[in-house]
Length: 152
Image (tube, rainbow, N blue to C red):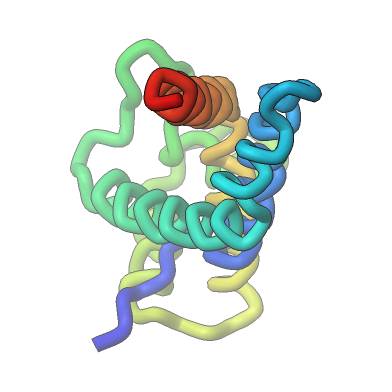
């Protein structure tokens, strides 16, 4: 059974790929360039970005099905942000949000459902940013370099 798409997986993976690439590039210097490029190739980053996108998809499903959409320490809330996206003004429209969730639960392949999936990718990046993704990936590169050069 195919997993339902709550976000646009290709859109999310492309954005994550760029974040991972930028993080990799920030770690490269002349001394370790070859090792990093071999260990963290474009192909590996692309594969990792798709795996991450599917994890974000699962997290989005869990969030959308949570009865309380508030996020501790964050002002974003899908109950207000989605109606703002549709109407252009802040309003609370539970039936509108529930209709979006139902479309995604049904794995609908309509123009509106696909727009919803794209909106949710944008919303995720707006809500959480990229810092932790970049930072965690840079730490992974640093640890890999440390282990590699310790073993030499």
